Image 1 (cartoon, rainbow, N blue to C red):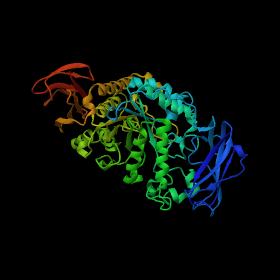
Image 2: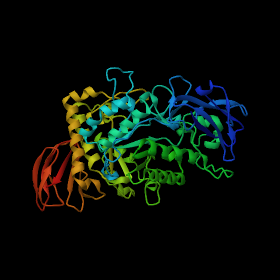
Image 3: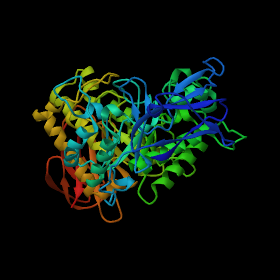
Image 4: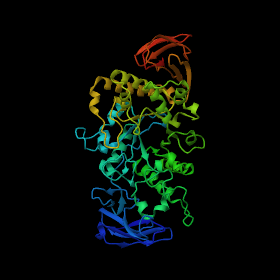
Length: 551
């Protein structure tokens, strides 16, 4: 038997008690300290127990001082199956533990931010139970697909939110319990095993973090809603749940309650789950750079010497969030998505817009890691869906996707792939389960697209010019809809991209101003070409990019 302490921070609540399987769900009184914590200790043998707190609520939507049963906001595991959302506490050798997982690969070298190729995935839809539309993928099924991601060349996965959400299926942007992983995907050890196996393969794991809001019945909403949250949505058109109030300062206790809670959860995920980065969902709605500076610093302090990438989802993007006095390392580059897709759909041709998104410095960003570029993500349809909506199918659709992909991997910035995009997944975006269709890889067009992605990822890893901010636009032809640009570094890596955004085949096209004479290797069709003082002559197909690598 060992004395185990339970505590609950509820500074302006009158009373609280502990209830649990160890007390036959009878109240165990808790004493309140001057620091705002209710505390009690219980003698427990080693084992697994369930518990909750019974609190006199201060929330405006309940009766004054009404007693409510709430889950511990800091519970590290939840029993969701019973429908009670009880917290789970595990005792081993007289101590509280999360689980007994032993990390194996913490000493692996992991890539720096500028080297990343990020793969965004949803655990439930990525893999597992392919023959059963109702089956949910689990952490272990992602582990089974890691070698596939290695073959593609991926060195970072970005998990759509895996904090415990209510119900059977969700994208995860409605977190109810911030310290507990989603149990329908497997146990806490399963998530740790997934992250450990990623590290073993030199892959970083970026976590999607929701710190703008919580799900409506998250424990803090029941305890004292307005202590942690804004009373009402600040922007009712963009409200996804009670919004954390990072401005609220408690002068009595000299603390920012919502900041403290979010800081605790960020540190916990870095220390307990060894994550390597966070995507901060809805940063525009958080609208508090002071808080974001603080939380990013907390994350970096917790991560210590290992690389840690802090990425804002601020739509539309703003340079202020990543520049010298901005809080974040990078942000999702939504204008890249809108501009490049409009050009491969043939809806527009605007050289200046294209140049702005291919070279983010023209928009005011400072460097390559300031932007994460993508052709789609979980918030958008797959390219195949949008092309099909425009009656562009089959070879023509795949050709246009390849043009977009060539730009994605050679533009300034960090590229991101949304699961299934690399082999032409065509399911539309939907809030219900949409498992990706792995059988598509058996088709020639789809597997050839996969090979194209794989080749460009590999090109990126071997041509370090693509890691830099260095870019020169060497040729522009608005009439023919051709744009050419050169990427370079000081070690002699050179890549030139010549992109044709028209439906015309350009025979014997002259590209002047090549940065170096001599032999260049054209990567897409695997041949060599000699560049003279007046550049090169090449054929370019409709909606095609040529990628030349200096030998």
